[in-house]
Length: 352
Image 1 (spheres, rainbow, N blue to C red):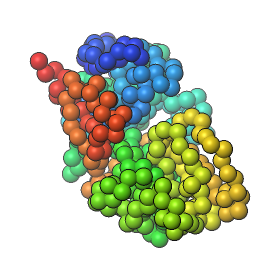
Image 2 (image 1 turned 30 degrees about the vertical axis):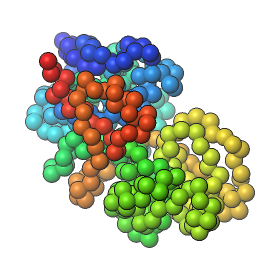
Image 3 (image 1 turned 90 degrees about the vertical axis):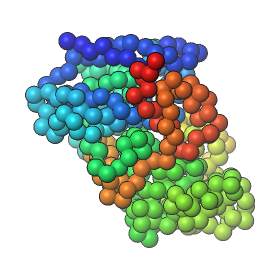
Image 4 (image 1 turned 180 degrees about the vertical axis):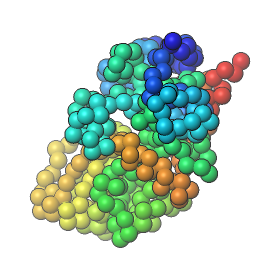
């Protein structure tokens, strides 16, 4: 039988999020039923709720940084038991048969992954609803183990902001003696600093704000470069093996390309869409440099990231809110008024 669940939903692009009751699908033999304890608030939640990218189906219940406790498991489940602390990230299924899926890169599924919200179940076509809710049902293959000893509230954003930073760091083999730069200090940027530093890299923050230096150093930056200062930018010419660009708005990439080392890569993780002005290809061609993109991470590398964070005591810097404050949190997020990620205490859902 289906499961009645309470959550918060946007019912149109112009509406505030409000309490909303909906139905979860009947758990299958390989499913895990999870009581949601905490849910991070991602820019993607806001963009989807307000249909900024198009394609939102209403009502939409956002939330894909989910931490919870296992309530029950299906008869075919072997990795989890009731009471386990677990996570669910941006995906709840994929075709599991295409080349990307066979490489553990479900986020690039050729048939498109089934996303945690604003998507449809592959079997019964029911809409998927996210973590701003009491419970979620997910296939065992897409449920993650949370290491013991970490603050659960701070773990939630690892399931999007964390893995979005981790995946390019691992793909481009960042480690000891790597020189990594991060553009932008927000939810993604602060995780990129922490993770790159823990991997052994020398880490630099590109920012327009000198006031961010103290926080950046606390988070792992070895140096800070003011990106509007031509002398500072010239001083780091040819330095970086990898630049992780977390800026979520349209911006100019040209000033950063000369700072890449020979064969270096600038990887975009924060912005979807067209960039202007015209890209100057001279630094690319003259130094075999690349511009790339990266999307979240596969389930195996997300588990790898969580285990790494468990070993190194890494969590996100957060501000805990009640679900009733989600609309205010969205407005504050637009102003970058959070250090560095909101996390909803889902116990507040049944308040009053």
